[in-house]
Structures are given as C-alpha cells and as structure tokens.
Amino acid sequence: AQSVTQLGSHVSVSEGALVLLRCNYSSSVPPYLFWYVQYPNQGLQLLLKYTTGATLVKGINGFEAEFKKSETSFHLTKPSAHMSDAAEYFCAVSSFSGGYNKLIFGAGTRLAVHP
Amino acid sequence: NAGVTQTPKFQVLKTGQSMTLQCAQDMNHNSMYWYRQDPGMGLRLIYYSASEGTTDKGEVPNGYNVSRLNKREFSLRLESAAPSQTSVYFCASSDMGPPDSPLHFGNGTRLTVT
Image: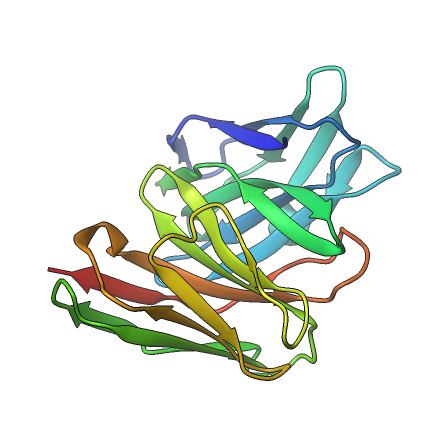
C-alpha cells in the first residue's frame, strides 16, 4: 500500500532563504507524486506533480521538486522564500485502482517565513 | 469560476444531532471525494464516487454516509454526530482517467461537535 511521510511538521525560514520541505513515499508501483499547498481558510491547490519522464518538476510560484527513486523521495524546494509562501504544504501519492484516482496525503508541513 | 462549492462553511452540532454537508462542482468532473483534515494527520479519505450512482468507502467511513445526487453534487451525512467527528471537511473532484489528474478542492466546512 502507498504511504507518504513528511519530515518536519513545522519549518521556519527567513525571507530570501532556501525552502526545503521533505517528503518520502512508499509505493509498490511506479508512483505518481503531488505537492499541494493550503493557504489559511482555503482548500488545497495543486503546486506540482510528477507522473513520468523528467525527474525535476517545476510548479507554480517558483517551486520545484525532484523525484529520486533510489531514495524514495520527492522533496520540495524554492531558492528564495517570500512572505506569501507561508502556508501548509502536503505531499501526496496517487493510489489508482478500480479506475479511481485516490490521493494518500502526508501529515503536512507548515511553512513560516519571517522577515 | 466557482469550481467546487461547499456549504455550510461553519457548523456547530451537539452530540447525537445529524446534518448533511453539501458539495457541488461545475467542472463536469466524474469523480468526487470527501476528505477530513485533522491536525498532524493530513487529509484522510472518507468516501469517494467515481460517477453518478456509485460510491465507495475510503480510509475512515465509519459514522458517515454519502449520496451522489447527480454528476454535480455529492453530499456527506452525519447521522448521529460524535465529538470525534470534529474536523474540517473537504470536498474535491477530478476527471476520471489517467491517475495524474489533479484534485480540485472546495474551501472546506469547519464542523465542531460538542
């Protein structure tokens, strides 16, 4: 069965610093991996996704993630944090069975950005 | 674009009361989902529906029922609310097809059961 582990429930960075949010997955089949972002009092929005092909995936707002099969990881990075990046971030793996796309989410990492 | 609309936004119930959370999407998606979000636990799937007339249990279905009323609407019912059901509930929809199709989420319903 697929599962996702996010390391660090809270991450704090300075504005302009590198953002690194860690995600490891477990999957018995080639995984489809996602990062979603949740701003306060809102639903989740897709940030980026990995399906097949290029292992470095670029998303919205300057975020990117690299799929590393050997490390079963899909860490999210952004070179320079902005105050508007403060949000909760969820890594997810797609569990596709019976024609249904179900997402298995990690517990989330709350990113704080301070001046 | 409305996307996925959930009502109500907030609700307070007493233990044992019942209520229905409503969800509608205007993107012509086939699949719809109900998740609950609890601190430190991420989102957990309660029920999902691949198409009209079909529903299936997710990870945490106990205490809930669902109805896929038509292609647009997917409701979640709590028959006898319990404090353990205090949570934020999210409805989502997606195209049925390739497994890489993203989910589109509503803004959530914040439910407190006292």
